Image 1 (tube, rainbow, N blue to C red):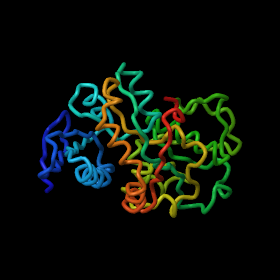
Image 2 (cartoon, helix red, strand yellow):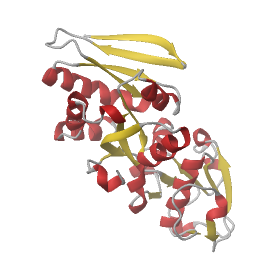
Image 3 (cartoon, rainbow, N blue to C red):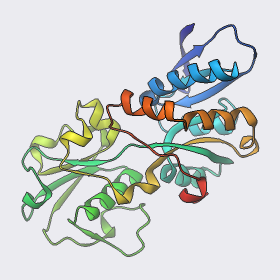
Image 4 (tube, rainbow, N blue to C red):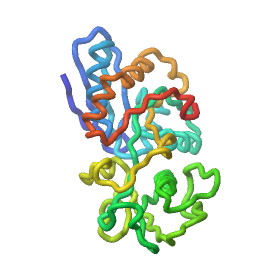
Length: 272
């Protein structure tokens, strides 16, 4: 049985309590953002069926509170962020959190209403890209992968437009709030749009973009995170194992119309 509760938790959040008559009284609280809820509803059903443990899914309206709630013990794990964002956030806020598993990549892509390929972009073309630091760094790496710019050697994905060392087409860059990147498409040659933002704007990244993230995507694998002292907790490890099964892989592909790519790798491959 599923019961939906609305509550105030720093921001307004949505708590979905998945309850039943299982063999365990244990409940695991999972911090999410909106796009992750459909997948974790499926995961919750599997965890309950296999382990008799309930998952309480807590949806946050921002990208700050899920990590702070995890640090404070208000949730047991969270699953909403890339390893790149996670690494920067825990360093900036001095948090004792660690990843316990990977989930998928949500590829960033380049879109255009004016051009059908990167090669058609004219000299002096206007490029919109998200202004937030980690998003902009990722967008710059994507533009470099597309052959439009060159970044300073050793660029780590954090930084702004001053990291561009070569711009042969003399492109003009317009940083905008990430949520606005689809809306400015009529006014620019290209817009670099996050996967979730694109899907909210009814774009299918694989079909509607003119260039999609590939080799640059490793730092942007999404993770499941826990507190350091809980990384070996058996039920949390079991949840991570369930997420990385073929059954959940198929759910990711189906639920998100192949817009998300399941990626299950050893944590050492992402620097942990």
